Length: 71
Image (tube, rainbow, N blue to C red; front, side, top):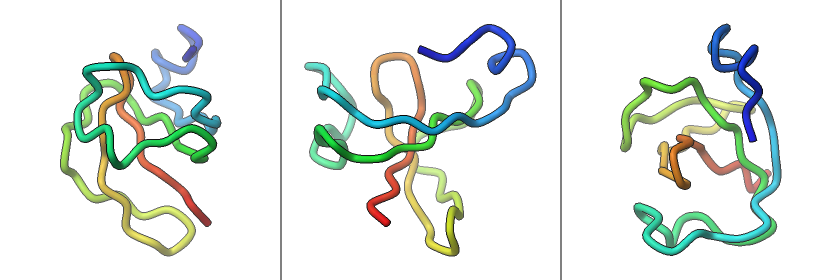
């Protein structure tokens, strides 16, 4: 889902959740149709990050940390 170049450069990438995998941490916070920012590997769960002037809490979807932008 995240290209090797983006992983290497720790660049965030936007996306839309199409399904919430079973076993996802804090799965209630990630639902199909949510817009998310996939963050660099190495971020930790629960860290608050600002996007569009709003604080979001990082959640885990499979092996990718993401935070929700419900706009």
